Length: 383
Image 1 (cartoon, rainbow, N blue to C red):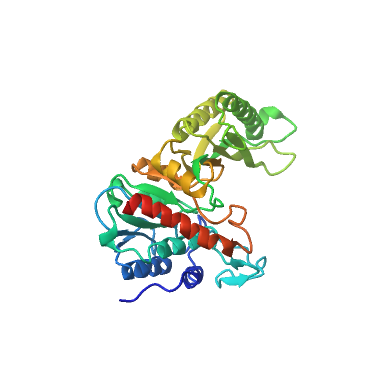
Image 2 (cartoon, rainbow, N blue to C red):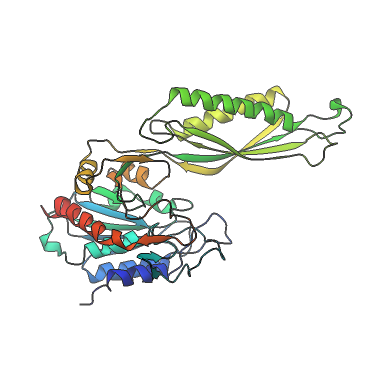
């Protein structure tokens, strides 16, 4: 029976297989080469492997591989896609993993193909008959763009009662909470006219000023009502990130569009927040005789909160020697919690390296990560 290559070769093979996902069709590509690499290695180790196409996405799939049987156990999860890269800003080839000065450089080394290779490596010496509870390795598609890979999964795709570790870059600090995010476009349409006589038009730009005033007031109210000291920024944030309106100083502005994002903390619901914004801004538009349309630029990722006393949180804290934390970036964790898995985010990379030119994974993180994964497998799958 063949076996997977050494862990450094697995990392290099995964990096050499481009799998960029993007909301821009110009950059978006499939992940099947990565998925088939993982599937082949895991089949070599005796896992039962399913490669499941992601609905609505050509050339994209999730990989679900399980060793052992029964309920409970551990799920090690990572996404197979990467963000696009800045051509010309890299000193190293993004798709040729390069070892230099104690680091391995390449697109996805930290976020998070490196973890997927380590997950496979952690299972190299396991045998199904030795497991009291199953080990599942899950590799999802499209985390960096739509989250459709994770959202397609259901409770029946993993053993009931599983505990889950997502290997996103946390510097091996367990994370049990993160903020959510959604993005929205608000477009007001009025009537253009000659600027010499305001009666000739109805300014969408002036209407948007009122909308923005309300949004900034709403932001203050959210910050006063919701607070979580575990986060570096302990309140929800609302950012007005883009605005465009009108075409010339001597014309009344006929149309104006604003883009915003809102990052809720645990306990806040995206649908309710979006509905409040739409209801209030619609009232402002109607009071000024303006037409209004909305577009969900990004439907959103919910905030995540796994209870502090959850088994996986307490175990992750014990094996790492680090208290659990909260972060501002999003993961697939909320979807996995919703599936019934208690989930913690814990990986060897650093978020400061994610989405950056010359992304790297420090080589001195590899053995400690394998040690932590081995302890988790031992506690949840073997004992």
